[in-house]
Amino acid sequence: MVARAHTVAFEGVNARPVEVQCAVTPGLPAFSIVGLPDKAVSEARDRVRTALSALAIALPSKKITVNLAPADLPKVGSHFDLPIALGLLAALDILPRDAVAQTVALGELSLDGDLLPVVGALPAAMAAAEEDRILLCPRASGAEAAWVDACTVIGAGNLLEIVRHFSGDNVLEPSRPGEVTTDPAARDLRDVKGQERAKRALEIAAAGRHHLMMIGPPGAGKSMLAARMPGILPPLTPIEALETSMIHSIAGLLTDGGISRTRPFCEPHHTASMAALIGGGRTAQPGQASLAHNGVLFMDEFPEFPRNVLETLRQPIETGEVVVARANAHIRYPARFLLVAAANPCKCGYLTDPAQACSRAPNCGEDYLGRISGPLMDRFDLRLEVPPVSFTDLDLPATGDSSETVAARVAAARAVQANRFADHDALRTNADAEGQRLEEIATPDDEGRELLTRAADRFGLTARGYHRVLRVARTIADLDESATVRRPHVAEALSYRLLSAKEN
Image: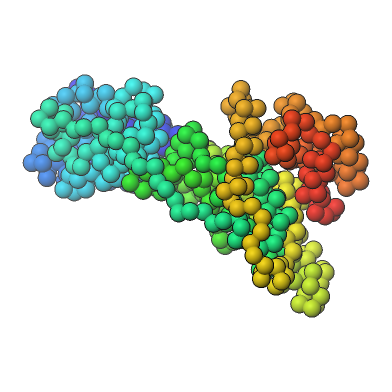
């Protein structure tokens, strides 16, 4: 008779249910695992056999077949050890088959029977809740999975504890959720001397999740400004925290089951590969773009990234997700990030300073920024030049609002947008609005429409650029607590868009 256990296989952040079917039949002694297992899953038979031997459980001299259904779904990872062991123990009538069949299990077994933590406990708990089953996992992963209220999570330290739990000798207590981790205090925006226009652009970008490009010479403060973006963004909502934590769970980045309400801030180096930025590799792991979901993706020295890597950003900027294509599957990861890019005006960085510019100026500037394609540049809602800061400004006391003050204005604008898009699950900020919905919320008054039309004709704005100006104007109006998009809002939005007529 076939015994059944249950587990999951991961496709991106989605956990696909997998049934572990175990049969012990007469025949030559063998232990085979079928159902498209990878190398780590195939090696589970040796780990399971040795772990059972540590409990003084000897496998019978019969043919043992473990089938992982559906058979056409690739099975990857060491978390199949525990469900295979449970299915085998149920097939040997050591554990009750009904109780095992009501459990979703995942965990890696050591040779002495201890359970080692695995990635993906949080999405596995979501899948178990949908199937109305209990999740059984290593104790180190229990705090992470217990954040799913609809699922009972049992964390065990070793295989012996699980056997005693199912037999009723020592029933394990459900796991408790981990702590809400607190990140170090964010850097204050007041630390940036001068650059008032850049600070304003940073506030607008944070309020509406608008992508921002900063171009300026070395030492102007571009990286310093970007590092202060997390300090003015509102905390993650519970839904956003769960979405972000599921991606970090798949990547193995959750510590002690803790979930952070601070928005992620990812800053890949300009030597990062396409797989590192977008995701991929042998197991199609999430990249920096997905790890920055609901947060900030800061790309310093933007033109120094390989051209093919930069071009892969065009799809997630528009759709909010990354699709990693493989021969047997397409893996999707959420990637709704706020892109902040910084670049020097040329290779040497001093294009605007005749005393320091190289002999190739101004051609070096065109060649350097020409590495960024027009369609990609067109996707930045805000583009501004960051001039160098004079020494006299550095000697002056800090000016401008603190991060706390700016964050309060950003939070108020985000609250307006949350109410505006309350009936649209796919829309959260002004940057997400498009089509008819964008026309309803961002149509300017007559003077604003006239200004926008003249600017579009004169500077050759693309259709995408036109709509992005409307989104930014709507965000500026929200910061101004205005229900209508007026001419000053459109004018300010255009001032951040028309960095160079050639770029549009």
